Length: 465
Ligand SMILES: *Cc1c(COP(=O)(O)O)cnc(C)c1O
Image (cartoon, rainbow, N blue to C red; front, side, top):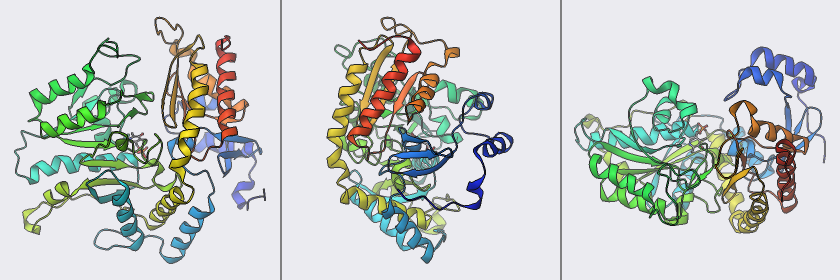
């Protein structure tokens, strides 16, 4: 492997970079006091499924750089496309102008998206893609002339996560992240998380007849007049702890929304672009939403870009003479940034050229077997998998499902331990999250499974049986 070009700033020592980081940077989702005390990695380089730190140590990117990377780092095909685009046009607005990469990407997305999603509205992050879906759904009903007293709020799920801006937080359901902002948020209807290991309704999957979907039905029956749209993460509630929904849940709630004339928003920011084994999670159950939010993997995890896809029905709700004031008054400065669109197009080419989706079943099966073995560990309460989105829930007591005390930071400590084995993962509380790039190879899967198993064994003091 040739040595990469170094910029002048890259020649600062690790120690110096750490000192400057601690002086000037505030990290996301991070208790900075803890950050000061722990061992920090300064990442310098990425190639394939690995990252290198400034000390030259190599780590497998087991979280796809926060659920974004798809084809591995440093892919020439994406870099060349971005470079070529930068040489032609760096940025130009989509407010009142247009450009080829934005047009081409919208065309390509419409071709592969669940049926009916023909219109793409661009933004830069998953959160903004969700805001756009929410605002569009809300305004759709206003444009149709529905009074502000009806179709004014949303139905969402407990344990749901849709981003960190206030609208997205309003439809979120994770107490730890969201509760402090409650006074700033709009009120919603919340249905239970479709999550069998810790069923909110205290039922058993064998006999419950999917009562969690029954709750959705109950809410829709009584309140559909209030509800503009339902929003959920199809099949997997990611940040809630990789909570996998039972087979058929998606279809059932989608049909309920149709029955009660409530729009259906699929947040595929995490699940999109192959993560669950199909290009979009909705495609597992052949579900066609009215609106779909995309982000994270859309550029192969290289540049910030997001998209909200809408059906022609939604689009037509905004279409009319200017003076009708049906326009969607929303847009960001970097909406449809051309190099980011070029990266997304190159990533979509790679899906075809590398036959990425065809290669997934074997990888998913390798993980399934390894996780099955781990599920027998006395402190592994539950293992959950949807394609290459995987969660291992650690518990202090397996029978009662009692969690470890918060202060023990068990998930965090085990994740740091994995680094000693050359694997980077990031937990959600005591759920260890494994979410490698789709390009992960068989021997790298084994490295990941080994690192996780060894780290769990070390910190729980118990071996896998
Ligand atoms: C990460 C995520 C978001 C937010 O995306 P950002 O790019 O971090 O704003 C929204 N929805 C889901 C399901 C996500 O996993």
